[in-house]
Length: 94
Image (cartoon, rainbow, N blue to C red; front, side, top):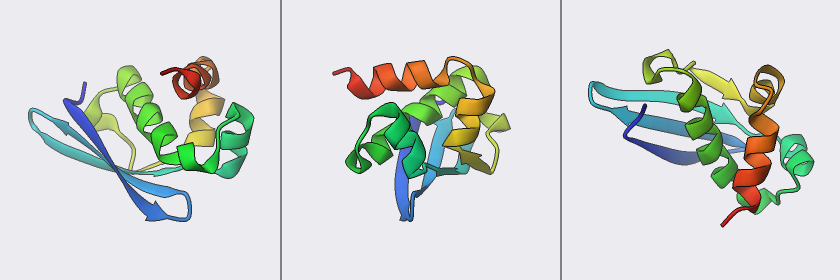
């Protein structure tokens, strides 16, 4: 599991995610489309927070070193059955 995650906005729904772990840093580009935000009932202002939660979710399911170079959040929703429910909970929680 990553010790910490940094999310840097790149514009146009793209983000650079850096996951630091004891052996180094893994970087991946994440894409958050407006359709997923709408599906989750989140506003565009919540997009970066959704990426942060999504990166944590993904890293809970696979090792940091296996982080793909590009992650589309809609693909996570298609691959992981619990992803949407977990993101709804994360986005509406405190």
